[in-house]
Length: 301
Ligand SMILES: Cc1cc2nc3c(=O)[nH]c(=O)nc-3n(C[C@H](O)[C@H](O)[C@H](O)COP(=O)(O)O)c2cc1C
Image 1: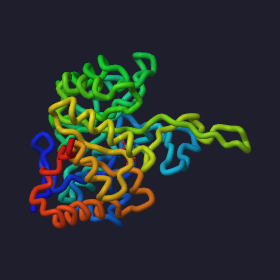
Image 2 (image 1 turned 45 degrees about the vertical axis):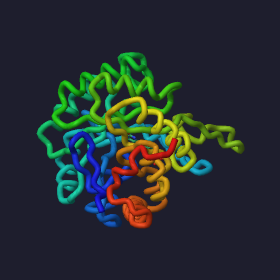
Image 3 (image 1 turned 135 degrees about the vertical axis):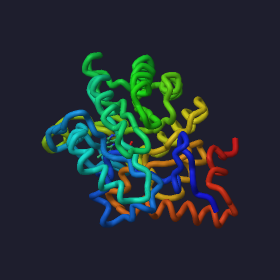
């Protein structure tokens, strides 16, 4: 039975990855989860310098999900390279570094710094604010998506995953823009912008007022967008958004994802990733599927 999948020539032992920001840089979960069982570990977003993140409260529960406005708190690339990459290198799993920045130059600094590090793939989070363009996220303007992809590709030594924002009218426009800029792989979805108000205090629950919605509540939207994006481009797509079980993951594979990332589910079930990898194998055994690649895009029209 083959569970290996290829992402731009990088071979993952199975299609199960962690979603950025929900698994630390592996160390927090390392005691509970055997990282050798995962196709890849995707790190929390890292910037050129440390970011303190947003004021608290910055997470809140919602029906079937959660809101977060962490604000991409991270230790900066120097500490990350010294502490987190050597930790992850101990395991037989692929390392994907999620990169964030406020300007194109910020992103490029991190990408160049990672060129000589033992990192397998870069995931570029373009939902961060673009300060120079007036605070609009790069990921909401197709011209900006194409330009940042092209700029990153010109400097990157590793294959580049462009992580798309779902907060757009037509995801296929953004997917095509990233592919036009030279993206090797796409990943989606990031969180959907939401809000929560406390009716007793009549205040916003999050200090930031708005936050990103994730978890099972977003899965049908994510699945629809992954299906649309996978049919709009020819590069591989990594699907995520509300995946909590093997059945959820298989839905994304059938919709056209070559691999999946598990995010919010880790918070209430730290074993979710390994259970999903095992569940995919069980499904393959029960259904006589020899190669997991047979499932990719195999939904019947
Ligand atoms: C607390 C939290 C922090 C996150 N931080 C990042 C991040 O640093 N970079 C990024 O690209 N996505 C980040 N995300 C988005 C997730 O990687 C994922 O795209 C999203 O949560 C949807 O998947 P899920 O429903 O399985 O959580 C974060 C999500 C959560 C809940």
